[in-house]
Length: 81
Image (cartoon, rainbow, N blue to C red; front, side, top):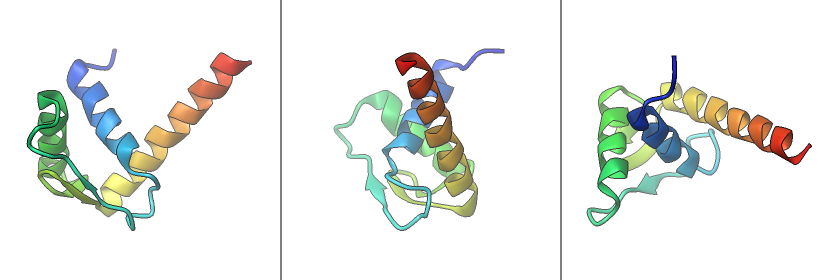
């Protein structure tokens, strides 16, 4: 199984959130890349974020963002080693 382009775009949106606490919100503007807009819409429909154009992380989204950041950090350390 591999990540789809849609999965990667959703991970990219989750990575925009600075922390998984849910205290920092984001806004995906109308002139943003269409893949990011669509990814935010899917994350909203799946209950990861509070608004179709970003908003805040839900509890489910907070967990997903934490895992996304952890995986990114782990892969970054591996590349640096």
